[in-house]
Image 1 (cartoon, rainbow, N blue to C red):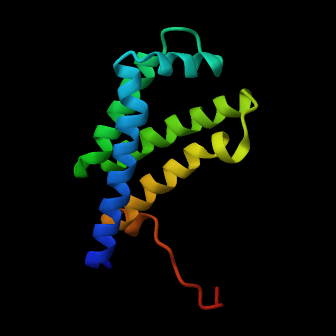
Image 2: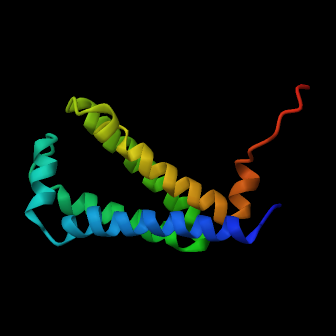
Amino acid sequence: MDSRPWMIWTGRALSALFVLFMMGASVAPKLLGMPVAQETLAALGWPHGYALMIGLIELAGTVLYVIPATSLLGAIVMTGLFGGAIATQVRAESPLFSHILFSLYLAAFMWGGLWLRDARIRSILPFRRTTGEN
């Protein structure tokens, strides 16, 4: 399986950007009880008090993603979380490209980083060149 250094380093960079964003912009405000976290969730229709629980799930998924042995599990947990975020944004009738699809953008960084840095993931989810034959 192809493990070129540029792929590994690009994957690490994408993964680092994903983790930094999640920890700084999403997990920390929720776990630190910042008003913006609760206000944002309330505006989306979430009852008061869910910020901490969602923040803990985000933290767990992000930590699992960072650990090489559990990175696939972390990506799966985060994908589930992103699905819920997309559903919440759809229900709230949020703008498509800036809000509804934002979790898809994060998932692209997360899965792209994992795919580039881990040959095992590339073997499970290969991009294949088609030769025109079946």
